[in-house]
Amino acid sequence: MKITDLHIHSNWSSDSNLPMQVAVDTAIGGHISCMAFTDHLDIGYPTSSSPFLNIPSYLYQISALQKDANITILKGIEVGITKSNRKETQSILEYFSFDYIIASCHGNDEVEFFSKKARELYGDNLLKVYFNHILFIVLSLSSFHSLAHIDYILRYHPLSLEEFLDYESDIDKILQVLIQRNKALEINTKDMTSEKCKSMYSFLLTRYRKLGGKWVVFGSDAHQAKDIGKSYQDAKGILNQAGFSSFAIPTQHGWVLSSESSL
Image (tube, rainbow, N blue to C red; front, side, top):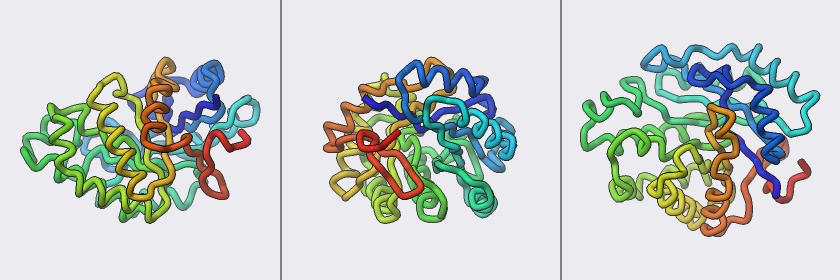
């Protein structure tokens, strides 16, 4: 079985101290055939916890690793989008050459969505604000391949799956934009030990397929070596149950299924 992991962080992200070479060695040892470094770029994030990524040096190091590694390594990036940083972020994405771009919703111009302040600020409207911001991201960002961790909000707030699914129509709007724009949906396994997370992705992938979605990507969201490829089998089971045959991989010529690629 060919395993892909398209959401891996390294010590180029402020919330990780994982050396890139260690990540590559771990991926190879875990029988991963394709990996993507997707370190954070969150311009103007509400706190200073995510400093500006030195992109030239970052890409240079990935290029050096690509030369010798017995694994496909994609030059990726994870961009946190807000209304105030969208244009600057888009300019950066157009200037540099990335193989893979993840669009993420970590916060808006007022608050980080993981924080208690978000709950205090929006109260019962928190999920509505969250989904509206994701919709803004997928509609307004022109250069990206996939939408990451739509379950992000569930990790940090005492929200039930039922509360989350009450916004099915908002979720459908997001999925329909991804489908119309030929973007992929990510299964993020950072919290896959949670039954709530598994049930959420089962619902999400079933809706995505029913609406006409074709491309699903696997991402561990690893910030430590031990989490690379985490819960792949659980994610694969959810994928198959939703009617998909395999995970997708971006190429210069479009999407391919991992089982059909020549990695």
